[in-house]
Image 1 (tube, rainbow, N blue to C red):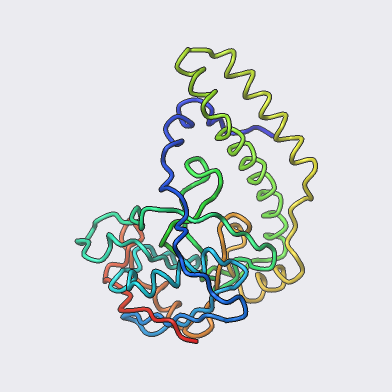
Image 2 (cartoon, rainbow, N blue to C red; image 1 turned 180 degrees about the vertical axis):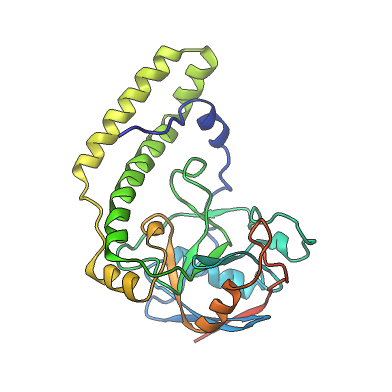
Length: 281
């Protein structure tokens, strides 16, 4: 396959966009304790269950809830039949038509893909993040999250999606290899060494193909196929964004939020706000 080039200007402009390292000060929870979070919104209550096998995300979310970080934050991005997103601290007092989505606590969290156990079914709680080109390790935002609403897919659509996701995975491997060689790429770019860049690109393409040859072909599990055809979700995000919880109560509220009228930036015309969050056991 052909790979999108990020070894020149794109690579140079995205190497330093990381928000920093994951917060190591988050409290460690007992792995046997199931944590639930009650979200009170202007549209009603939503209850989340946090997964114990994604401890970095779980503990960070608990920390932010206990610090009241999410209180008064907006659902700043809402897309019908896809997801509702919140967690940008800049949204608390953002004037109308302000573009949101870049705010965070100043750190990222290491990806925790527990796949295919956790996938993007309707009601899944997942961490937002920057795109692969700026974030080849797929680290999560320190605070922004989304709840999947999604839609139902036919078996044929899912099989076609499997092919596309295999291609996307190969591109992701290539992007990560480029990031690992960022210093060399920058040095050759500064020296105007086009031949060297082309040679390195060819080496990374060959290495990508070698890595992909050892991987199993991407296929949805029988459970995923059943859920995505009967309940729905966002299968094209699987194994790319960390799923760290799920809605246990309040999906009617989530569906109400996803149906809100939005502007050109997918921000609800009428502010939909998180009033408060609290930990419940």
